[in-house]
Image 1: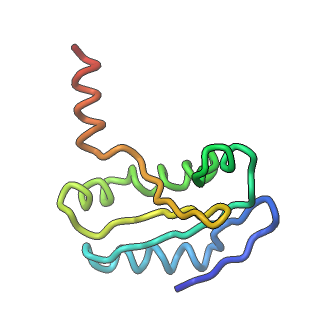
Image 2 (image 1 turned 135 degrees about the vertical axis):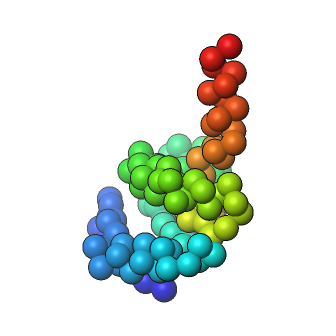
Amino acid sequence: MHHVIGGSQNVAIAPNVAHALWDHYGRDERNEVILFHNHPQSLLSRLLAQPLPSRADRLVLEARALQPPQILRQLLGKGRVMFFLEQEGLVKEFTLPSVLALLARMESDDR
């Protein structure tokens, strides 16, 4: 387990922590990584009563979830990379659409 402390408006995963996470993930196809991130209060999340990932959060998820090894693992039901967001005491996993959902959508767009 690694704990990274950021500033009041942002937090970056330190290079040594990122290396340890992805090294662990790459050692075995069953290994998983859980990223848990907290956000400061916001009016929009308060109105919607749920944590909302920032654009930067989504970019980190996309950078990891759309890699060939991760896509293959998802298809095979193997080790995952999971992202959780906490805001104002609420916790929610945030995800991208599944690979199968993306393929189905691409197929329907071609018609």
